[in-house]
Length: 399
Image 1 (cartoon, helix red, strand yellow):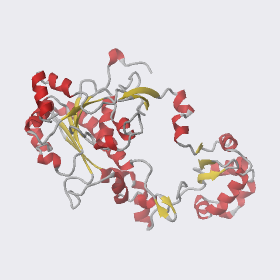
Image 2 (image 1 turned 60 degrees about the vertical axis):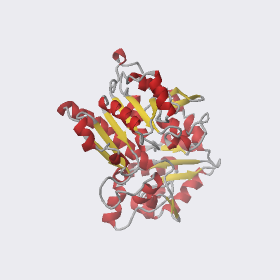
Image 3 (image 1 turned 120 degrees about the vertical axis):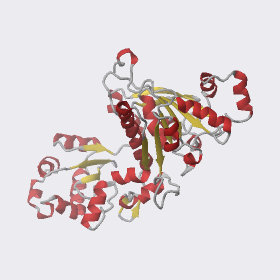
Image 4 (image 1 turned 135 degrees about the vertical axis):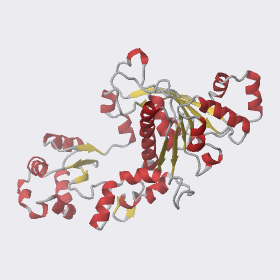
């Protein structure tokens, strides 16, 4: 991908201050950083974002942290101290966006709610991310990804018939982070028209509940929630994992009756199944899934995964292997499209995937992952603090 003209990126010149931790807010601000925004991540002295301590798997750093925090500057501030509050407000005076996902009510107690800030910094966009929002009976309730997966009903429809399961990634946090990111972009456009900053409020419950739309409609109006079928689709068949003779598995799915015909004739080589009343409609195939699965796996019993995939490809049936993590890391499609970049982290370098949205002529920043407080002295110097002043703040553990 060629660089943008004169090195211009969509968010060049935008300054973001973020009081963030864990996943949701860091995911939003990392995407802003990739597009050129200067993101100043405010962290607690000595400890920092608590996601730094989740594990030590990536050159001594936490896997969550290196994923979510490239391209940012780390400034340590103890916001319980007046001097730290002064520094923060100096930053906000020139900032375009403030992002926070502190504990419920914490930002308001520090005077960092939108109404207070808007009166002082009229152009500042304030993005508040929380579990449940600042009103309603759950206002003060703490929220973590697993808990929101449960509250939004996702766990109830995920897993096998006998046991529900969480999603394997922090999907509630990711959903909230995506809406925060797009909300901030929308707010920047709005400010371009009105000259006024606005509040962007995102809750994890509302974000994930939106993603539950199909299941909510199906369950509410149909009377029963979607059944749990593990890696199979609850409402379409065949659509799921099927074993092959080499001990592997292939996942494939059909979307219409034309594909069912091609599947019977070209993959199963049993065109007579087209006359079998059990499988005449999608709803019939869902109802008779065990019998259909047995037929499919008998056919695949003499094949490897690659052979089954080739047969499905020839019949134009959508399919994929059940990849493990290393297979994804080494996926030939990601390599062919040059999706990996090298990013520096404390202790080494790592591979990092480019953002999924490709803007023609724009190369994402893909900056380094900061050590805790790595930019504190630089930022304070920019604000006019002398070396002696910075040393005094360090002595007081303000930074």
